[in-house]
Image (cartoon, rainbow, N blue to C red; front, side):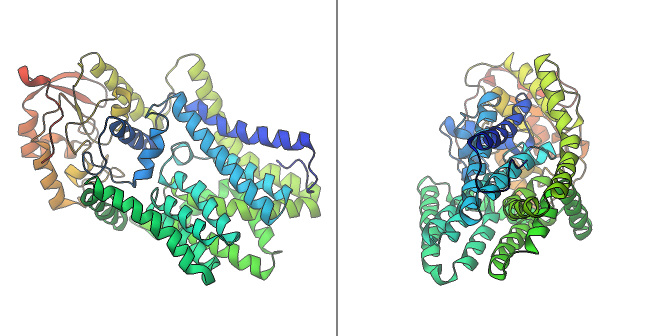
Length: 493
């Protein structure tokens, strides 16, 4: 991956490295016809925003506002607009970590960092790297905050940490890293963080969204975090982390090599960044693949130094080990890009278990588009936000999926019924039955009958006013009976 190990890179070497970064980022175009669970939710929210709806006030949204606003940039559209946006974000993050590493180390480390970040946001489990979840959106402001902390620009480090906070509450760990690095400048760091956070909170309050924000992001978020679905979270964490490090072995080995050679003052600062970034991964004891994206920039940064040193000191051996370790994720995950590209060229649906729900959602959307009229609304029972993306329809009120109605989070509702949000869920069901969507899609009952709408008496009575008009392998599509079919979006109480 490195074209040289000195800081005297030729223009041709720089061009090849830059093209490699862009090329790796653009491989996600192979997913142009697919949507992933951690992106379709935010895409749907962005569509609602573009129709004038306010998150937390007009529709339930259990993530910080920046996650939805990011997808507003591409108009809430899947396909080319989405993948171009994501590729541009990856390139921007790579450019920033290049700048940071060049300032701290030199040009060899800068290109190593950029190439590593592009490579390892391309070759891993697609569910962990393709969708831009809060963890993915944290990467760029995290790098920016730590970069500013290194340059002793405490106020701007706080501003970037605040921006990351509005994408992911776990970005508070980024603030902690900056606080440790900038201990004598804590007041300026605090000012940089508090001012944009106060502006953001004030904006939510002015829109009447503050109570919903507290309930949906923080109350629901804390309940979700303390109710891990893992029966043995420590064992799961160790196993998942070792699996992740196995595919990121090139980074792990290079980081260890660097740490053995770093000076004490550098080692402790980078150690702080690594430790608190990994602490963010551990929050909630779920260890989902995308959680490790908050740890990735720190590991990449240290590994870039180790790689440059190894190539300088033991060029042939280091290069052979590096290529071998990079082949593991490339061989494991690379063929999928080729297969998806061929599927796209030949207009075939991918034969891949991970995208079964998305393919079913596309089929449901096609059925609804054949029946819908302007002003029609949609409610989806289950967690299938992609149906809103593919139809670009609005929900009839605050609720638009069944998590806050059953009290069972989406990370387990396909197979379990353990309620973590009981009394609030019952209140939300009462709110739901006073809305009158044109279409209702049951995208969960066929997968887990114990959480079907008919299980809840009030929802069953509500559903009786609808007739089954179509079905797919995994979903039931209902349309409102009688003359009241064209009901507008109901006002909120």
